[in-house]
Length: 114
Image (cartoon, rainbow, N blue to C red; front, side, top):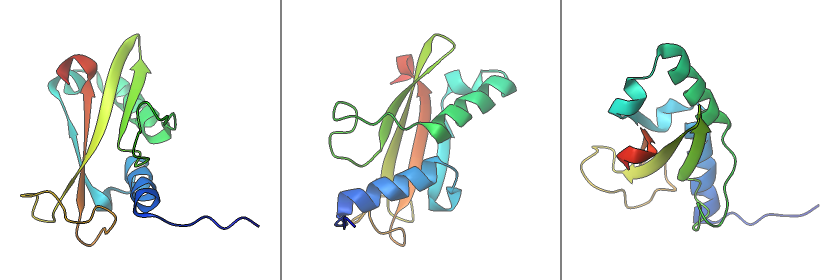
């Protein structure tokens, strides 16, 4: 049996995956005007693709934190980005691996809005 050493990056990646996959107790979701202008059914499908996204590579995830991704939907490219704030949402968090000190904010946007 292989033992995998936990690092701050692997902890952050696991928390980001949990959050992205639906554990919204870890943070807040923001969407941009382009996402908000989509019909409800399209928004639901885009969020389904977000929850199931798992195409992390060294190119889009150089730090191994699973905090950014690119989703293709209906011939368009959408990005998601997770940022880490303190609990008051005023400053960056001192420790994104500690959910007691961190509020995650995921922004889902069309690529032209990045």
